[in-house]
Amino acid sequence: MSTDEWLHALAAELRRRGVEAGAVVAEAASHLRESGEPPLTVFGAPAAYADALVDSLRTPRPRSHGPVRLDVRGVTKSYGRRRVLTGVDLTVRAGEVAAIVGANGCGKSTLLRICAGLEAPDAGTVHRSGALGWCPQAGGTAEFLTPDEHFTLVGAGRGLARPAARDAGRRAAAGVDWDPAGAPQGRHLSGGTRQKLNLVLAGLGEPDLMLLDEPYQGFDHGSYLDFWAQVWDWRDAGRAVVVVTHLLAAADRVDTVLDLGGRA
Amino acid sequence: MKVLTVAEMALREIVRRRSVLLILALLPLAFYLSRRDGHLGQSIRFVCLGIGWAVSTAALFAGNAARGLEPRLRLSGYRGRDLHGGRLLALWVLGAALAVPYFLLILLDDQHPGIRYASVALILAGVVAVAPPFGLLLSAVLPRELEGTLVLLTVVGLQMLVEPESLTAKLLPFWFVREIGTYAVDLTDDGYLRRGLLHAALTLAVVLVAGTAAALTRLRIRPPARLA
Image (cartoon, rainbow over all chains, first blue to last red; front, side, top):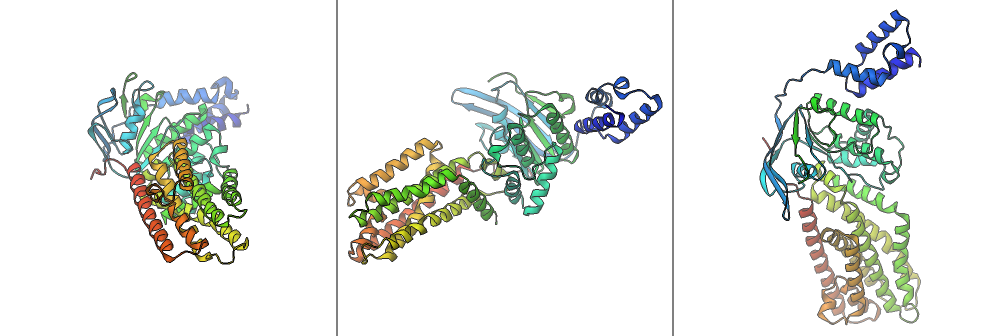
């Protein structure tokens, strides 16, 4: 791997991790020029070096004081005799990321559907403010529509004209390393690509509150990192993001973790 | 405009299911040909019922296929009536596209010059109007396609088999086909036409109101209150 290739790969890996690459890459390039050593010898693989850099740069993030976008109080939900949620509270403000974690079957998706208003709680209250972006765990796309048609359809709901919706969708898709121009109908997309479409649709029209239910299913490692980079971008843009996950590798970088524990 | 976007995309989805479209297009023809030998009146009634069945089935499947996407659209700024209305509009267009060629077939397959063709057109218009909201109503209350299909099969089967003067026949959604069909083919008095039109109008009103209410209930977002 040449120095230029290595630097290019490092920049890509840093971007995936939500780190501004310019200064870091310039510093690494300067060091390599001065040492004359091969980059793999000096720094190791780009991905591993990017991980090390991110760890060293990580600092506690001050809590946001933006307006409350989601306020859940005392939510309880049962299906028949099975209690799924008991007295759940969650508050998420603009510019914050909340993660809902827990074992399979502990009620994460149910809570998110209640937050979205798609299901009613048995007890408790949910208040939302602002436009809502929704990324379900399954479904959420049409078998017989192309990605551009999805952008048009969802964009029209947000008041976007066709070209604006298509351009916004394609731009957002580039953020998760996907080019949807000319892509086939939903039924012909791979599972991971379809999930990228699902994610892009959730962010279309820049909603204030994003509710994402394990949106990275089927993603490869690079796409998984792209996803979290996208989440940090949304947070930095002042959006409130709620992510349901059972794989929280980035627990220290979210603002709130709601652990629903084991199976209900 | 949102309703037109939903209608356009729903139509795109439907026309891309080519094998389904082909079956839908040929099903009424099978009904028509089954009674064509010496029973033109019956063949006209049957083809109209066939179109009603085909379009109702298309509506049932379109309604069920949309279930995965509709919560997202509802949360993306669409009202329930945009989604239901758009899908209904698309299915009305599909129904009309299916009915017009069959009307031409009846017109050109002229064995009985005395037939009141304008009344045949009225039957087809009634079928095209009633079948989509009827199919969407079934999809709203019966989320599994097999259940909805069996109900449709029962309705159309009963429509063909039960005594037309019985209360059961009159409670079925396509009774007006037989009534107006009798007026059109057997050249009976205006009473048949009036009863048929009244039945079609009442059926349309019932399936529209019930279907819309069921769809809006299914697509409602809770709670309506938002933070200031």
